[in-house]
Image (cartoon, rainbow, N blue to C red; front, top):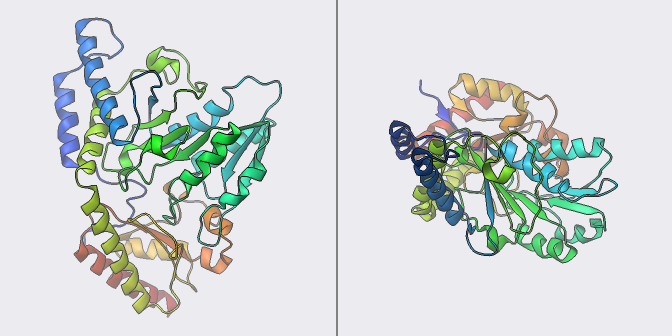
Amino acid sequence: MATIYLDHNATTPTREEVVDAMARCWRDGHANAASQHQAGQEARRVLERAREQIAAVLGATLSGPQADRLVLTSGGTESNNLAILGIARARPAETPGQIVISAIEHASVIEPAEWLLEQGWRLDTLEVNREGVVRVDRLAPLLTRSSRLVSVLLGNHETGAIQPVGDLAPICNAAGVPLHTDAIQVAGKLPVDFRRLGVAAMSVAAHKFQGPLGIGALIVRHDVGLAPLLFGGHQQEGLRPGTEPVALAVGMATALVLWQNEWASHARRLTALRERFESWLKVGYAGLVINSAATERLPQTSSIAFPGLDAQILLVALDMAGVACSVGSACSSGSTELSPTLLAMGLPKPIVASTLRFSLGATTTEAQIDEAVRQILYVVGELRN
């Protein structure tokens, strides 16, 4: 039996046109884009064209007197680490400063923030409401003269709850504090405009929108300082040294351009599939809880609690039945701890402990959704009995 893959928030299959674009790039045998000879200059032109395409789709501008910077990374985790550690430590100070992150951040934001805490920094957390949306009114009182960074994700990786980052940006800008947003689950699902958001930095990852694994980006506003995490080269202004992956950059750009041409119909289709999935599960399972159902969500994400069941046991049973999903984010997979995101929302522990995340993608079909519902209801029925 073919597996019904409902874990696209972890990673989604690379689009065929993207594979073809990268294959052409590899067949062309481009030289190192940092080399000064003609072959290197040609590779540089291909790379910069891809960089410009990525920036254009994401609402950044790489030319002009106030040009944004687009730093290519190995993926979302590195982008978030570079943002948290790079921005926080960019401003010289005699004593460590303060950073603020939301209570529902991804581990790749939480852990570097906690590392700074261990180094003597102050770490404050911005609360969320019951639907998993940050409390905008709680931000200003947290900011101090020692504040160095605020980080709030654009769309939550577990519940799909979209965050009011556009409302937080004016507060941060008025206080002179850079605001970083992790847009990794939003880019390639819904339109993202870096400049319109008003943020100082934004992280994205290609494999979340049918691009290749192994590449992501951090977009940084022109006036924001950024200290590198890596050393040993001049590439990317020394902010992220190392040989730049031309083919991966081409693949990332291709995936974004293709998505931009069809995003509206794509979002409508995913929303309709998610609603079909949730509505039929509610009919078949009394007491089913859909987390963050009362707020605006990403079209592909569904966080569902099956009260009375253990999520880890249910996950394994569904996998054996041919339905692939997850407990929380992929980076937290295997952890026995309850979801920090759901706990921060104030949900009862029995709800948190029975929650699975289902995430849809471009390859998900209506037939797969219907079959997944049948399999899920059968499995939960067996476990209940």
